[in-house]
Image (spheres, rainbow, N blue to C red):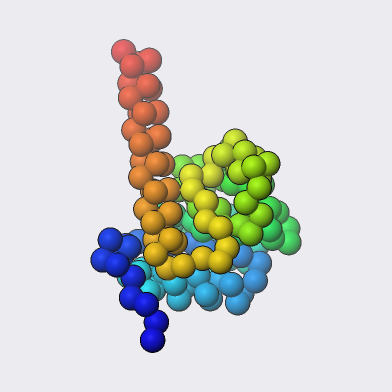
Length: 154
């Protein structure tokens, strides 16, 4: 019998999640975990290029990005999303999924703009909690930026 996630782990059904992993199998696993916590709208991308295109098309609320991929690392993709002049999602909340949770990787990821981390193996509850954390953190950062812009304009 599989464990049922606690009510606090459920996410709003309308949450749009982009899963970026070069392994379609892992992408499917994350999709199932997300469905287990209430998320129905999951888009999968298997490369950094697909992820950028998917951001433009689906406007996700959050992205789950694997650290180790073929074309880009999750940190490199985060940097592109955060700083490319033509980025379709510079403020997208990002959760980095990694089996390489070393201090060096975490520091690099934080500097690139990752909002939360999940270490493999991943549970549905942990995934939901980190998605929620990333969305809340990015929302606070956007509000701070908006306040700073208003103060500078006045």
